[in-house]
Image 1 (tube, helix red, strand yellow):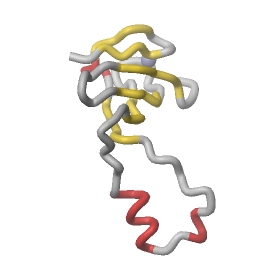
Image 2 (cartoon, protein in one colour):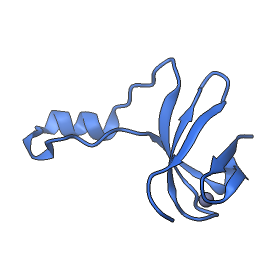
Image 3 (tube, rainbow, N blue to C red):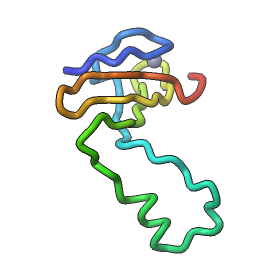
Image 4 (cartoon, protein in one colour):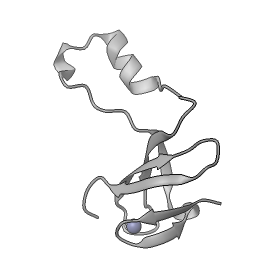
Length: 86
Ligand SMILES: [Zn+2]
């Protein structure tokens, strides 16, 4: 079980959250992307062998979107910050 510390609600069980997967930064110039570049942005993730940044939604809490840095080997939550106000 993971414990995520929501910046608005404090430490909470992972079952209160929905993981939306690896966080991908939006393209700086989206109108200039071709279909292959869009598909890469939408569907392909790096899956690195290192700590990852993920987007989590506090569904059963404040409903804020959070940016979480997690180590996939140890499951340690390294950072949990807000992406917006709840
Ligand atoms: Zn919260």
